[in-house]
Length: 301
Image 1 (cartoon, rainbow, N blue to C red):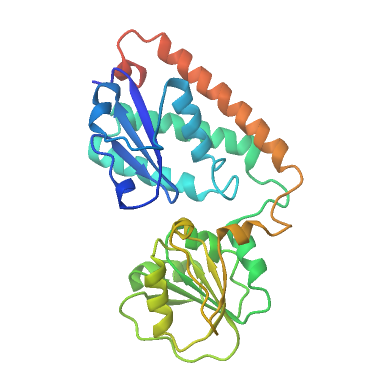
Image 2: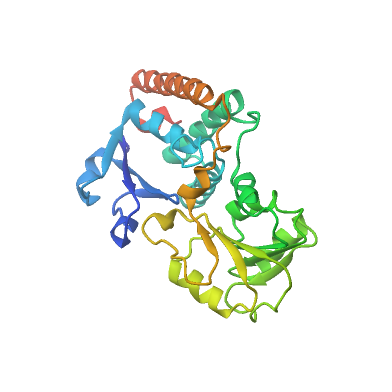
């Protein structure tokens, strides 16, 4: 079946980017990656800007994405968590023994190796939470829109604020974080009444894939005033949250990473070593493929 597996990489831009017919698609905040058999490539519906990769080149690219080397915050872990979720859904649909599921197992194993040797635990290395906290210093409370992996990562750095509210699509999902971080307030994005007026200065962190219009609607319902809004949405590149007169100061991803303390001094060297390790992993994967006489199924058996 899988004579030659290719990947199609497409940066997310608009509604058109949501579809890659004929491919098994992994979606991240920034991109779509479609896994497709070579003989099915014509059915994918390629658009200008799509990049098709195969063999070790595809494997290397996937490892760089999973390890966070192609993310705005180099070495971040959110994208690896997204790939684990993709793998789990794939196993449910196709079974753990499917060729593509087995490929994911190999990628995750190599990604853990690269991260443990070169990226994890780097001294002074930034996280989304630490960067957000720098921009919220001096505030009395923080509200976080979102209850997914990114929100969890940010919350770990916000527990020292006097008041923290987590607003999820459902209160149950927000309450799951409440159990991890006792003392935070769980709320529902759609069904809870507007928050009551609270004294002090508050910040808002948008850590959910919402449209700018949806964020504005939520803000309009609040009686609490927010001084600073930190927008962590990748969608903000083409759907920016616009500052309004008398509204909060808006900090987008670009502004977040322009902080002069963002990068540790040894990060470029660590990234170079990680890319070298990834290149060796990809070459080893290609050599393993070349000695298999029975195609993709044999490779992943």
